[in-house]
Amino acid sequence: MSSLGVTRHSFVRRFRAFAPVSLAVLALACASSFAQAETMSGALSKAYGFSPDLNQQRASTRASDEGVSRANGAWRPTVTGTATAGGQETRIQAPGKLTETTTFPRTAGVALTQTLYNGGRTGNTVRQAESTVMQSRETLRLSEQNVLSAAAAAYMNVLRDTALLTLQQNNVDVLQQQLKQTEDRFQVGEVTQTDVAQAQAALAQGQAQAFTARSQLQISLSVYRQLIGEQPRNLEPARPVDALLPKTLEEAVGLSQKQHPQIQAALHAVDVAALAVTIQEGALLPTVSVTGSAQAARDPVSSGTANQRSEILSAIATLSVPIYEGGVTYAAVRQAKEQLGQARLQADLQRESIRAQVVAAWGAYQNTRLVIQSYQAQVRANEIALNGVREEAKAGTRTTLDVLNAQQLLLTSRANLISAQRDQVVNSYALLAATGRLSADVLGLKAVAYDPTVHYQQVKDKWIGTRTPDGN
Image (cartoon, rainbow, N blue to C red; front, side, top):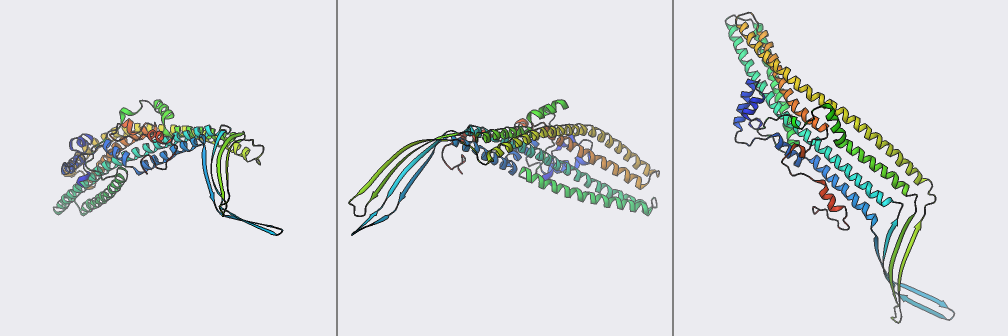
């Protein structure tokens, strides 16, 4: 358990209302003092570089970049080379005469085709591919937000569950002492067997709660390992990212409508759908292309007495005007228009969805700040109450059950305060994500930033080659 500890003085400041808990965790921190402390910033930096989910989305964005290169290919000519070789035997039967000829024809040629005009479909397809790239980048930003938000929650869950386990273990120690004192008082006739049974039941409950807390900590450790890429060691306490948050709900909503990746991705999807309509309409317009070819043929005869040679050079312009294609193109245009309408409605839906998320995140964050104050007051009051009940029990005016109930109330209030302090940090990251600003750059993480524009510039105008920029 030494690897789960948090730092000494900072933890005491963070959880100063929990003297028993702080001392126990201080012991854990001292046991792991030789290990370098992990901070929230450091953990998020590791998640930013390690996350398989984020890395696969980066690969998806790179794949989208190639769509622009493919679309640009329609501007370029296509060149095809051909070659043939074989043998041919010809027999001509005439009256009184049989002529036999064996030839071995050989041909080689090259053809170049260049589209000059196709109803604007090439330009619109390029612009559509570029919008798809932008949409993919927003999806990448959303994935980054989700990864960092989940990693922050995992970090705080380990801190919370470590403190809760320590709290429950301390409670078991206190209940064991309580049981021993009750048994001693029973021996001298100060209390009854009922009091002993009540103390035994409370101890059993406390042990069960400690087992549950240990199990929950193991779950949080596994999630931390999954998201961060390594086991947590000597975690520093974390604070809410107050400095990065908007000051008012109206400001938070306004930021989200401008910056949230889900909204931006939906708007790029509208652009993609609008260009799809234009592309389909372009299929109703004429197409102009030019084809140039060069071909050389040789037809040697088996006897070697004659060789036929020929060379053909051609340049042909073609105008293709669609007249009627069974209504397929018209149906495609109508379908694209309906899909455009759907994309616009989806963008509106995303705006309202994000607005609701911001309002909920704002309310949750503000609520935790008030809840913490209430729980702190509750802890102080329960501490005073427990001390008073214990003194009254010594005087014989309170029962063992009264002491156990007071101790359970204090335990619950301390656990609630620990959870609320965890929620405050996690909710601050959730609010930052709801505004669309949770990123490695905004958080100032010391991690190698991934720039999707680098790969895009490397491939968008690439004419030839099967290797990716990283050498695969």
